[in-house]
Image (cartoon, rainbow, N blue to C red; front, top):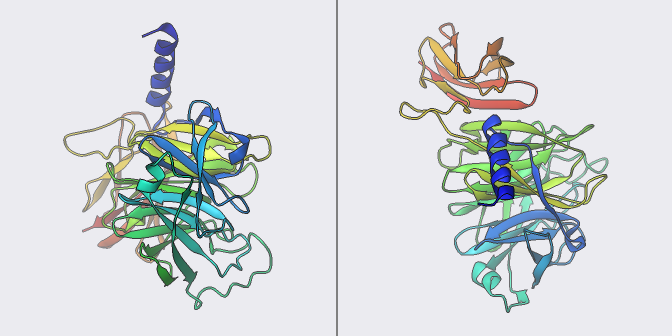
Length: 381
């Protein structure tokens, strides 16, 4: 190993060791052809992206060492009104044309293409099938007073088992709705399946089947508008918001982070548009998101146990200082705050809280400091 590589690996290791979710490190700026890069897809070690509203109906293959476009393919039977995200399953890729900043679109759709076509370096255009959908008119009237006030914008999507799942970009309340949609071409009406208080505008999503983890990328509305990464895991079936959530505000302020993709189970790539002081770029984030059990512990982990619990809960909240001050809140099944307390946690230590006065039932617990939030559910018996 040469000296430069050794130093680089050492620095990266130190960075990762000090942070459960590392700050983004720039891999490369991207070519001007993809200055509005939105979705990311990694297939057979080839990175694909696309531009959003008004761009060509094309996917672009990116050289991840220098950001150049290696090749592009046109998607037939399609139009890029507002392409926002990419995802894939074992046989197909899906392109989400569902950006809806104004809240008035009636032509929301997803284009479905074969991965085997995408793999062929000699193909310059690919046929697509169309999945049309609309929001349930009982809750969506497509009438908004001005742009960027709707809770029915959408910029994030994953493929999970036999369905597609959409995560909305709620301009009004900074939450995200979860929708389920068939992968089969057709016309559908969708309603929210669940809601997550993301406290940010969600712009991209990806799913890693090896760790059963979902990554969401976006940014906080307002100034200084830090980028946000959210990791969801330890969920059952498609109840994505009922497992564990780890949320971190990143050092990228005013950066239009829109794409995210798993490279490995502990490694993410994210991309941003050309916006304000940021050129379009590709970044890397490392993270450690293990769940504590009786046989394995990690000092860089957030968790609560036992679960179910009777009289006491033990809390482990990741801390990189001598002592971290955090806020603890517990909510009942109706969303009512039934317990809150300020706590101080030291590295490699745990905190025990008395929950004996809580009634038996299901609860949500949140532990958070200035930029890191851990949320999970537990049962009081």
